[in-house]
Length: 314
Image 1 (cartoon, rainbow, N blue to C red):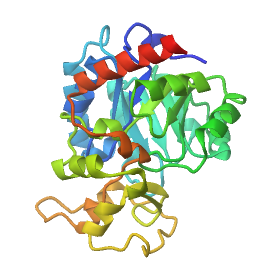
Image 2 (image 1 turned 135 degrees about the vertical axis):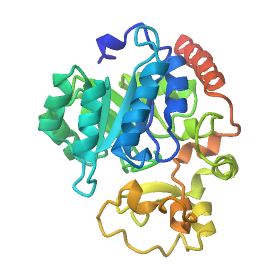
Image 3 (image 1 turned 90 degrees about the vertical axis):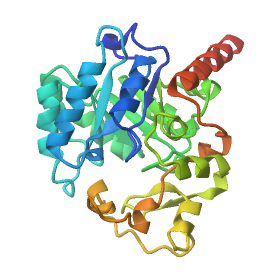
């Protein structure tokens, strides 16, 4: 069990803020890193590889690698993402310190990232996914467990964490309903090195999510989250109220078909009115415990107090 050596002394909390579609943008990433938490974003949040390149310049200019937490980029490693190789080369140009891969673990990509000194963490939802990622040589596994936002799995973390820890001695992260410092302490006690937190960071002032999205999270309970593959082609958790607002019946959604739709396939072109399908928002069951929209600095301060208190009481 270990947080990467090169990150020692730069983290206030053992946390990676998860990359979120159309929520995680450069300002949010930089603010997160400056508050001692690893900030990340999906490359596809930028519409072009050229714009993605500009974003990385902006982030690098805004961070001090000797003091601030590292940043990372999420790459969708899937044949339906035509930009994966181009975006990887942009990451290589900037020597991005952390690459988070989803929907595909490829040893050649891992080797290329290792070639510039970067780390690769990979999202997994099953034991088989973990085995493939370990075979590919990744540095960390992100266990996306039951109740997590985005493309989540169905396995309870009390079963998932020890099963994967027994077969992997690299950095282990857990995603799924970690909404405060007590939850982070519990995850660490279970055997992971870091928390992987998404939904709680949506409801921060720096997040690019619309106010309607943030308000919906505050109003939602855990039963307002539905697990379906109808939205992106891959099973994930989405807010029922946003599905209803799009004019759809959450209980009678069309099958996803097993084909992943990239972010570009799911959003309207520039200049066009947003499509209803695009306004379906992803969130985890942890919405039930979110009641405010603090700054990232305020949220990290709160997490740190709760985490320290929980570990002291253990």
